[in-house]
Length: 214
Image (cartoon, rainbow, N blue to C red):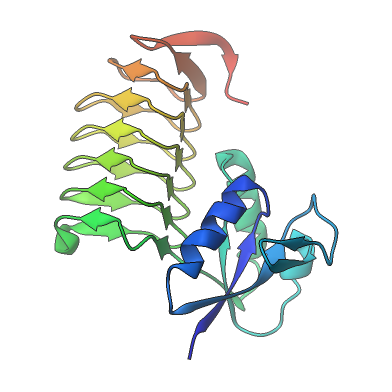
């Protein structure tokens, strides 16, 4: 019997997650939940069943995945939904993902690993981590809860990403560096030094922008 799953978020990432779930025969999507869509809308052949608050009212055991890129929004939704004991976060891993040493790789609840992702060895992913298309994660990496890593990112060995980090498409984080909680690394940036918490860095080499993470 297929396991039923709800997708939180019906935007572009939600549609990507839907396509991933369709490639996994053990799952069946029951519908989308999204505050920005109208109940009854159809997206990719799947109906929007309501807002996030509607999902939180479910009284039967249901698995769900949060298809939201923004770590701040993802954290808020996850904490809202965790108040309902019937909702269980599901981890979705595309069939093409390569985990070279599965015995030493720990993947938390509610993670999404997109097509072409490669993980090597001694890696820890927190809860609700997104690793999008064609990214690489090297040895001894730790990635905090709610972090989102966009397509084509290379994370070298012994990197530590804090909670709620956003890494833009095509960025590179060099060996042994630390990126503080709720920081943002711009698309295409090359991180060559540690990044403090709550800031945005861009460029090659990556430098801090004025202002805080938003």
